[in-house]
Image 1 (cartoon, helix red, strand yellow):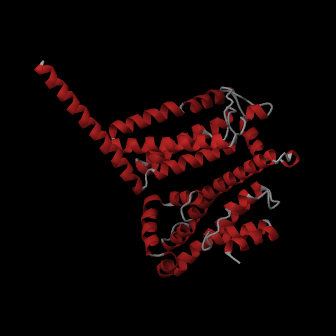
Image 2: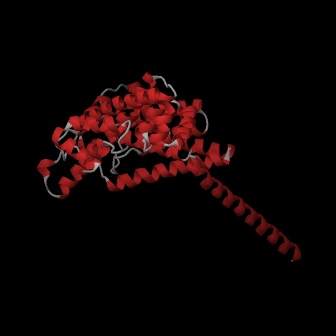
Image 3: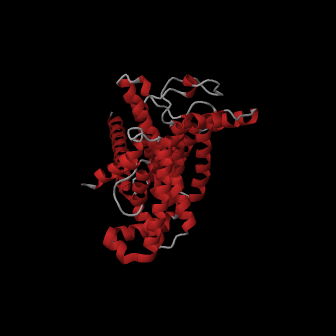
Length: 361
């Protein structure tokens, strides 16, 4: 019996206990992630939100166990299990990002178990490590749970099983929790914050492009990736806007009919903030991250998005903002810069030829 079959058997027979065991062991040694079982929680008769929370608890405790393995066993055992390459890269990663690296590994495809071991080896503060794990993993698992719920709903509609359609009340509860607590001053502030995205992102990209061409190209690439990702998901998964489904929505902005999932404004804001944090300046990045969180909150406050839309938009933005700062992306940027130089040289040659022809006449 392979590992996946064992994991599936655990979830089928033991439910949330099986989810916990898979999450716990995946955080420090085994390769089967809990995401596949979170996305299929309804199939196993489990509540998706509770499944995501149980997985977060399991992966946090498993990460702490991996931390102590790294702390006690040290470099030699780590190298035997994961290899010398991961040790060197991990050391550079921790030196550069610290606790933010734990958060990033928590909700991205980066090998979290490696980060857990390395956190112990390099004696990172355990409390910070645990907080970083929760901040990274919980949003990821909640997003996966929501995506699984959307797929289940889509499947039920296609197969005409309308009685089995399940909608997460938790998402609606969070929406009303944010949207129904308002006052005139906050209304003005949130509308302004929500409307700053396109102007601020555009000004930032243009400023960077003028100041440092390579940084400008990277940021623009990050924004393009974020836009493509959000619109692909909007096309694949049509989720009606809250004001089209719910009653008593405190709506402050336009009444569009396009898909609510995910939030494009949030994706752009976090793509910009993440890029600036990792690729330009941590101080500037922190300021933009605070702004990005306010943008996400404002999108729910003004009534045009659900909290899960914002959460997935945040994940898309963070991933896009981080990816363009990777070393392998440098080659792409250099190629674009070289093409631009060639175009400029070609334009100069054309102008020179044109001037010569005019003189001859």
